[in-house]
Image (spheres, rainbow, N blue to C red):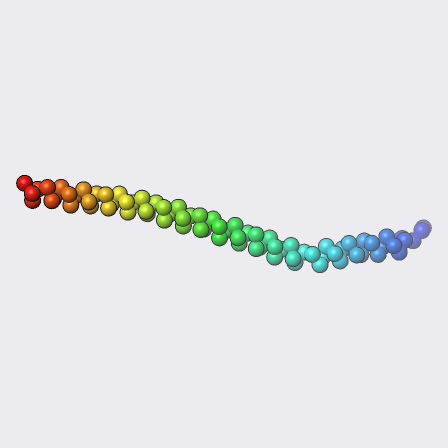
Length: 77
């Protein structure tokens, strides 16, 4: 039975070492990517909530001004 060529063994070993060496960096990169995505979704939700509150504030201001104008007209009469 013929032995395995030393060059083949070395190539396989180097490939395994390369994969094991890169795994932590890839894991951290995935964590950073996931964190960035989560933060961007949170910021988008905050912006949408702020826009909704701005619309409510505009409606309340409009109603208050209308009530003040109606009250002012009653006193003028």
